[in-house]
Image (tube, rainbow, N blue to C red; front, side, top):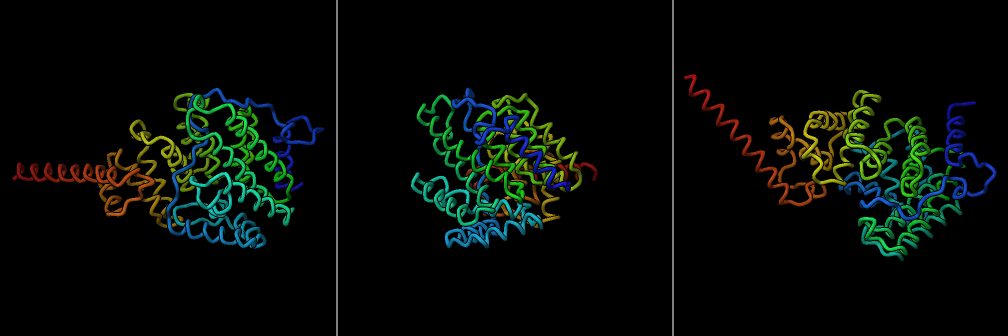
Length: 373
């Protein structure tokens, strides 16, 4: 029995639990509470929107193919990317960018329910015309998960109406069914595990089952850092974790993977955590050197990225490496990525702070020189 077949069987055992005689994944999986008790905002907040040119161009290329119903091209491209593991500048997996083109309406957060319904109908048409396509089914699952999040909203749980919870639960059940169907396909996809985790967390599955999915996903693709991002967010205290859990997870993941790829996974985790918590770095200054190592590894292996450069510049503010701060802010120049800084005004405040540090150090050095003379 080859390794891929063994992993596929293990995966099916995970998702169907012990009730193999049942027909529906929704009935097979552990029960879930439809109204989560957490009083925090939506469980899996989206990462900061990636504005890098290469990423966006590729995403739009895939979207164009989808609109034209060129499903064969998308399936072939996804298959190729699973084998080649190609990445875009900034270290983004090209496979992830492919899914970004088809998993939500083109209007994104501004999309109406009608826009979502149109997308879901299109994805269902893809599944029907390409019944053996794992990419189509994973895309459909991801879209249903996104549509569920729209019903729930991003507010705290006690602000969500009972009707919204009911719709949220039903849409997650649709996502769950699509994920179960995708698990039956011959070809495996690392993004399947990401969506399976997101759906599982949304349905409050037991952590042991979710950990098995994470382990299976990282066995398939150890450096597919999107898996680590999803798990890290759900190690926060608001989701049942303990203080320091996600930081230990990030550090241990980097050590386990090792080398440049370990540093990149570490950077990817902090990137997603910062997207959900603008105040993150106020209490995580000690990790700045490791974050800058991750940024350098990204550039070394995959080339420069405007979004990653801005993230690194932001992280550097909280460290002690003044030379790195000067270099990174100089490279950002006068066109900051506002998805990182939240606003251009914030960027200017940080930049001015770095400039004051540089002037202070220069003045101190000059004074010491004069005293010696």
